[in-house]
Structures are given as structure tokens and as C-alpha cells.
Length: 228
Image (cartoon, rainbow, N blue to C red; front, side):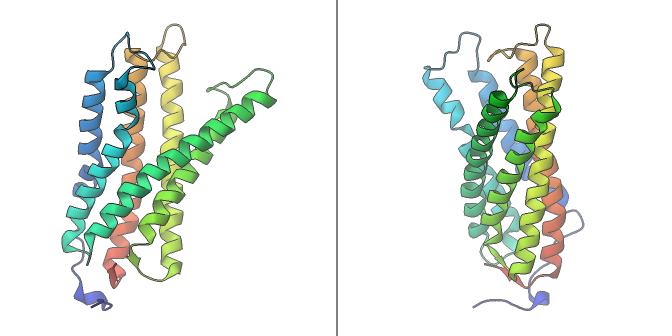
């Protein structure tokens, strides 16, 4: 039976954003800690550890979906739908975002005589478009679990797109900060300052996305009828 009366479902508390932030923070710290123990100076691309590290985002989004589904358990009708949408949508969002980034980076390097430069203003384009694509994919899958009209679903997707773009632009700032910190300006795979700075910017971007979408989700939960 579908609940459609707004007052029938519990509403989020005023402190909703705190636990909501932890659904991203704990998986990020856990996956980051595992990655930190596996990365070493002699790591090669053919090393099996590299393939495990490449699959780490899937573990991250699984944990995020699980925690968010548990948090929303008392607020929504079927929290597992949100958990699955976040896990699958998050994984596809990263793939879409990085594919967009790679394609645009190659395009800029092709048309630019100076090649691709992270510090150049044009470098904002791949990061911004990647965030737009990633945020749109994740927002779309999550919107499918919303038991609201498509007008509100489109608003949710728009919020996710804006938050995703902001998160990837923070990553751009992190990459440039890493280049500034590095004495040589080279991006070595196991260079500690680079890894720490990029990891910090990834976490900051994830928390920013989480905060912006959390505000929007709290408003939807306070005004909606229910979720799928």
C-alpha cells in the first residue's frame, strides 16, 4: 500500500544533516585508510593491488548506500531502493564522470599547442563537465526512488548536478594544490604530498555534495508523501 499523505510519514529531525554527513565520512575514511596501506613506492600498473584500488569506489558507494538506507529507514517506505540506487548510481556516476574527464582532457590537449595544463582555466571544463555528468547520473537513479512528481524529481537531479559540479571543481583545486606542494610539479603515483592533498580534496568534495543534497533531501522528506 502506498502512503501519499504527507503527515503519515515521519519527518527528519533538525539534526538530520549530521548523521547524513557520516554516511559519506565513514566510508571515505575507511576506503582511504585501506588505500593508504596498499599504496607503496614500487607499485606498478600490472600489480593486482592496482585492480583492487580501481574497484574501491564500488565498495565506497556500497557502504554509502547501506548507511544512507539505514538512516532513511524510519523516514521512507522502502529504504533498500535508495540504497541500491545510490550504490549503482554512484558507481555509474564515477565511470561517466571520469570518461567525460578523459575525453575532454584529450580534446583540450589536441587543440592546444601547450597541451593539457591542470592550472590553465580550460582545465575547469573537464572537471566541471565531469561533475555535471556524475551528479546527473547519481541524481537520476536516486530520483527514481522518490515518490513525488517529475517536477520535484527534476529539481532533485538539478541539485545533484550542481553539487556534483561543485565537488569536482574542489577536486580541480586539490590537484593544483598538490602540484604547488610538489617540488618538481610531477604527479608520481605514490608521492605522499600529492596523494594526501588529492585525497583531502576528494573528501572535501564528497562532503560538499553530501551537504548540498542533504539540505534538498531534508526539504523533500519534510514536504513529500513518501518514497518508493
